[in-house]
Image 1 (cartoon, rainbow, N blue to C red):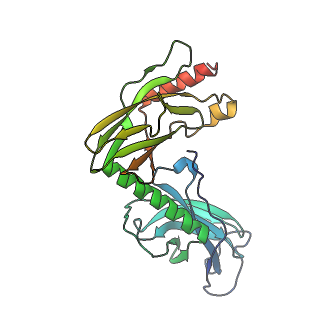
Image 2 (cartoon, rainbow, N blue to C red):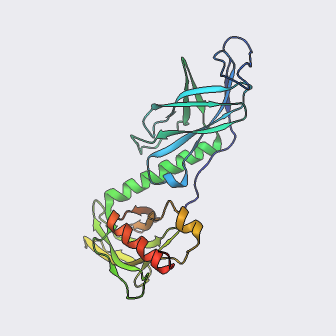
Image 3 (spheres, helix red, strand yellow):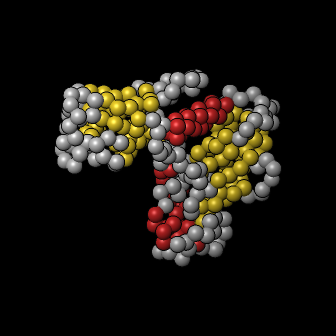
Length: 282
């Protein structure tokens, strides 16, 4: 993943006062009649990149404990939906509540995204802070760019992987296969990105790595996939993105876009075995 994950901090708040100014929930149970002062934001963690999983981030800037039982996003880029949750947080606390980024619509919009927060019988609609707004736009733009590339050209790993040598832990050799879709101009693979444990490299580096002329429909790039030399316990035991591998694809000479490639489970097991062998583990 080595893309920096998007996060959010402080921002605009919306206050809603109902009833008196009681702060009875400040250190104990939430008070349904207490004023509510929340900051709305958005975050997608690195482990969720390339998926529809994300979070609405809420900060309690009020003086009372807040109980939230539903949260969602309101924005034309995704479906408006409130997701059930069960969260209680005290003054000053920040929580991340899970949402799904479904129903993506890639038509441009100038509407500001908001968070919808349900608390029993009342619902707040909060503007996202600047950081959260940028984060949501970045996630949306990357997803829409990937969608456009996927329609234009199919990029995937080939089905065959063979050992790249007799030495234990030698990288596996395979291919990246490119098949033209709606694209009618030249297609190029301009870069490869491995992961915290893996190097993904062209067998014969060139610039670009692969060119698919406008008159051709398919092409294949020979690649190697294996250990990048990180053998510390933290990397081997804590990697959650081992198989998040990317190819940079340029359409008709345009700005390269990242495409995430997947490996089937048997191939993942073979690659991990090669990593462990290279590190002298197991």
